[in-house]
Length: 179
Length: 387
Image 1 (tube, rainbow over the protein chains, first blue to last red):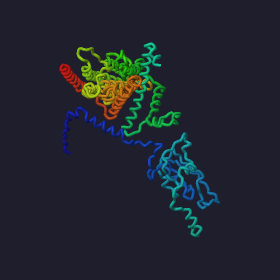
Image 2 (cartoon, rainbow over the protein chains, first blue to last red):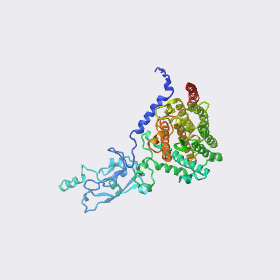
Image 3 (cartoon, helix red, strand yellow):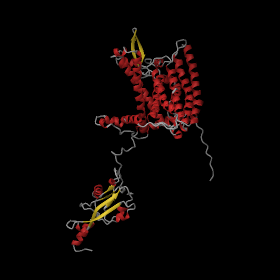
């Protein structure tokens, strides 16, 4: 490639006094002085969280109030930093959801280990674990930062469900169509 | 009350007056640091410090506005600087290291003694006389300001040298070179003003009061024009030199944090550092005050509308207290506007390179000041001989 010498224009006398440039700069800063501020005043104002955001992992109920987790422990296996610990438990035989067979007795996610990768959500066959829009966690001790089952459901709440998998299964069973 | 005050011994009265002025100047300088933070924030589209408030004040209605303005942040900062641990590094010359910030405060607070900041009318022997409000009415006026305020650089030199460290030393060397370079232009730039106010053959004066008197004409006449309009080049040179003298951007060579860490106060912390800081703002306030007195009509609200006319309209000519407060208010308003200008420039311009500072000082400003002086000397001579 050829080198093209570009001659720099010599400064005019007015430019060499700096004054017009300084005046221009002062005008710019004055404009910003009165402009609306860009800062978000954080704890009072929160940023809008986009859909699909990977926040703190949570457990959710289905619209009928049934806990969706069946403690299959797939998330526990897939979790790269081994942040999840599940203690499986039984569902009482007389409960209306007895046909689901299993539910977690205890479900702990260690937020000091979690890397917010979302693999648990991806692997969950029950769509029971979701990374939602909570993005701040804080605590005074290590123990406080381990979210237990109760805390996980508090954070998760109820999410809409399009499948009602277990209801369909129960209906099919009752209709003599068990597979 | 007033009688009681005037019967006190003169020395005690002077001490009280001086303390009163310092008690205004010192917090004002501290408030400037908060103004600086807020103004820089606003110019960068940020809200600036706006969260601090003492819990027991929070329930008072209206405090929210002060909180948003960061007023309590100022108190928090002040408290922090006063009470935090004050380290003295092991490698410094302790005596001079501790002496330097003290020395920086002394000229900063001393210059204000000869700066008039208001005026009132009193009747002496049946005549109305305009009396200035100032601590020491001396005839050397401006000379005293120049003489004392340039002592401020000694504290910087002392701090840089006593710190026994490279960057502070470089900073202090720069400060002294810069001060010498710009002191010349500054002094030369105000000479035309004093050529104009000192009639040939009469008793000469350098009093700042006289300068304001010469800008106090009523209505459309020669005396009512402020010197900034008749001597714009003088005002400009004085302004630029003032920026350099107070070590403000774009001339803050002594502490340029990009190349010298923190300059002369790199090794300082806590209370000693805050003394340097406040001294710098005191210099700014007094420097702005001198500029306002010299070129912007002092305590006169508008060109052609002097203070005594305004006081006459408001019927407070015979109330020296009210008139004095009015004058001080107008003067402080102008000074505040000027301080804003200082900060506005600081958050607009980048710092000059050191060689540029020297080139501007010696090759541009000084010849300009000399040419300006010669021009006004000839012009004033022509006007005086014609009249």
